Amino acid sequence: MNRIGVFDSGIGGLSILEELQKELPNQNFLYYGDKKNHPYGNKTEEKLLQITSEIVEFFQRKGCKIIVIACNTATTRCMKKLQSKYPDIIFIGTVPAIKIAYDKKCQHTIIMATPATIQSERVKELLDQYKNQSQKIELLPCKNLAEMIEKGEEQEIEQNLHHLLDKYKKEKIDSIVLGCTHYSLIKKQIQRLFPKAMILDGSKGVAKEVKHQIKLNHLNNHKSNKGEVIILDSLIENDEF
Ligand code: DGL
Image (cartoon, rainbow, N blue to C red):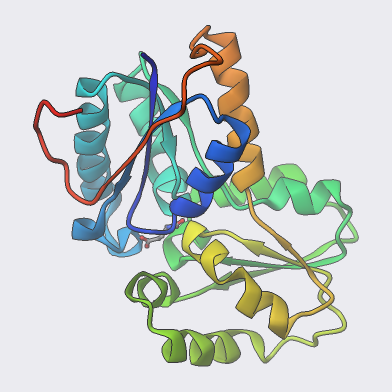
C-alpha cells in the first residue's frame, strides 16, 4: 500500500494536507507536524538539513515513496540538498506562489513569508523567472507571525498583521501571496484587511503536482482504497502503522 509523507514545522502544512485529501481521496497520508523544532525560520541551513533528513528517513522506514515538504522555509532552503541526498524519494515542495501572480497578470503584489524564505536563493530565482516588467512586487518578511499562528495567539496575530500591512495603500494592492503555509490558516483575517485583493497560496498547485507524480510513477492506490490519514507530532517508532 502506498503512502505519502507530508511535513511542516507544525500546523501550517495542514492547509496543504487538506488540498491533498480533496485531490487524492484514495491516497494514504502520514503527516508530521514538527513542533519540537518549530520555527524552522530561525535555523541555519545545516541544522535544517539535519532536522529534515531525520524526517525523510523516518518516512522512508514507513514506506513513503513520495514526500511533500509542506513548508516554504524548508523547501526554499534545503529541498535541493534533500533531492541529491535521497535520490530514490520523489520530493514535492511548497514555494511562494509567485508564478500564479505572474500567470494572473497581477500588477501589485505583496509576498508575505518568513525572513528565511524571503532571503533564500530560491525566491530570487522565482522572481527572476516570473516577474514581468509592469508588475510591482513587495517582499514582506513577517517576523514571528508563523510562531504566533502555531501558538494560536489571536490578539498578537491581529496586531502583527496591522503592523505589517497598514503601510500599504489598500486600493493599490491587487494580490497577496501567502509564502508560508501557516499564513493560509489566517487567510480570512488577511482578506478582511484587503477585501479586494486576491489571496494566493500554492496548496492547489502542490496537490496537482503530487497527483501528476503518482500517475507518472505508477503509485496509484486502488479506487476502492479509503484514504487513511495519520497525524503525528513526534516521530514515534512503533509497529502500529
Ligand atoms: N510553515 C512554515 C513555512 O511555510 C513555517 C515557517 C517556520 O517554521 O519558520 O515557511
